Length: 98
Length: 379
Image: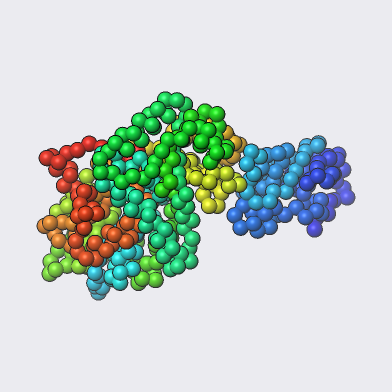
């Protein structure tokens, strides 16, 4: 759905999404990197389990909730990617202790 | 143009709604006169417990009334579901009051002993459990938890959905709901009451004053009294998390949708427009000492609300001697007692007489100087 610009020359950042390696770019937010990856990155909502993707990309809608480095319910659109970051697509409610 | 009613219920909060719904259920023509959205509603300040343990110290009749309500709640939830399709998420598998440190454990033990020793009170099987015993039922408690009391009759409910179910029921029963109708005066002539509101007059054969703190000014208009005062409480709500809490606690519960509610303070300050963060800090601190993993959760909402508190903490139900057909109902525990209000109080109002064996102890006559007693209906 999304295609990176050919003029984008930012350095690569390596992250891990649900165990798979992914190359993002410096300055990407987690949500931008997930959307650009072409993977199925739909989370499941906490109550009804409906599939959702990041939507507003500016910290308002909370549809980008994701587990980052073992911490659940992070807003992926507000967190820049970092080398070695481990991301898990959150399925439903935040888990206990995460 | 007038439309006349069998009963006008003044107050559309949880208490008034339960009574009105119960009257509609009995086939009565009912009007509910409510204030607007800016009313200081106790119905949105509640913590949604259906709670029995520790209630009634100083008035054994209140223990029995509370146990009766707990036992009737299942029937209420079932009828609301059948009528409205709304599941109010009633859960009654027992609840805890947990203690932090040895002093609190000793204090709680002493309270339980005093309750057990109180003559005439219903036995509701409240018992003290050690920290190890608590841990078998609530595995995620922290090391500071010294134990607590458990009562198998305790539970909780989704109180907002209950409120919505009552209002959905109004439509099914043909109950007329009038928002923005605060009552400024009450008169009686020709065998009916006339209620003055800014939107005109409402007439009814009987009236029930269920207006929370406003009962203080309404009750004397019809020869009744409702001595009480408001109290303020704050609640903290976290983001949703996986189910971890199979039983509600006095101050922590997890809703059917996964949020954790942390309550509930009791303050004398009566401005509900600002939050006291120091109070929230204490509540959150105690919650995370009780369940350490809660410290990781984000808080998504906090609010302050004004609640109703009769002078001695116990409910007030009366029918006026000088204005027969005028009833007053006040209570703090509008969630817990909703079943009694929907079934018992509604029946008594419909029949025109309060039943002394059930609610005789709750007359405001107990506040007469000759009858003064001490006690607390709350904790």
